[in-house]
Image (tube, rainbow, N blue to C red):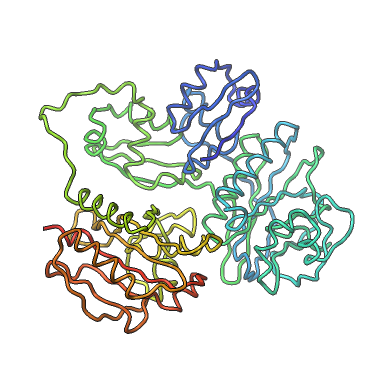
Length: 546
């Protein structure tokens, strides 16, 4: 989780009300963030990755104003229409771009310092070190339209920021600090992404801006460019950045982006609409609220709500991408209400706690595999289609998808565990072998018969990776595990595209098909860039329960 340091006097100035350290800490601790330190000059705050809107001091001040009642409901940012049109051509290295203009900006040392901090945080967290998203800020008065986002030869020239000499783009990757650090993001492509105007290149994303358009304290009008690999993420980053300037009372102007087959106007501050019913709110919170209270509590966290009978319509601001489900909205109500105001109740029924069967068998599996020398890893249930299917040499099947993914790394829920283990291997090629791993974890499948339309299974997967990894070795591990679990089992020949033909087996346990094992196919290893043989297994533990 990012640790941010805010200038205390600057924060209080943006809030518009004098606050004691105790007041600041009390509010912050109520909003899923933690105060690490408050002294005379600074506030150090730990912010969860989901609250990207709080990565800037402006966003943090906005949250405090809303909670204090100084500002209610959705923020209203005016966007003026500009005449600027930007042609967006096909760029293989970074397909998506988003742009906007902010005018009458008042830059001082504090604002510049906070801009640098938020850029660095967004690059490292949201942008995955500029791979997914890269940001460029330019003096708009030094740019001469028409502007085009395109790809160009590495031999094209630019005077990079901080230098006086014109260099070829390929030379920037060799001689400039940023080029050396981020050059790997474009090196593999024949042509590289740039923004052009009448005078030539003024931005070379994700590497460096031009010296010509650098921002100084005298800059009044700023052109913002954001490029990346995921369109939603690129647009969201732009909207978030522009809102920072809007909070500073700068004039926001839209830009029309002209793609090959479509047009788009940015920034887009349109809120998202959600619907709730009172019953699910009251049931989950355990309290009843009046219509007026519901409206006021949502306003306290920067939302707008209308209550009509049993229905609650909620408008969520564009910057709150962490709100994905109705439960998230109810959680915001609880935060606004104050957890300290809920009255605890002793349950009427006394029960004695115990482990469920699936947890007992999971612990037993961990114990057995650890004793065989395998190392346990824990991977997120969130993944992507490429890892789950494409790299595993499989056709894509219907699975649970995220409606508004923030990153292309996490677009769906996993349906099996082995891809997660292979991803660990692919990232640890620098570690000595053997690398023998296992995971006991959940997968989620679509099941239309269930209330949630999904079914969660507990599985175990394991693998061995070294120069002599074989079918016989992984078969022996599976046999030891099944014997330890007292499972009556047998094996059958099986074909699976992730495994080598003739070296894959089906596991029949207690009369049911419970898993597979074998040697991973060379094509799969190539997809993951794994240079050692791998033998692996996966078993559905739910099917082993009697």
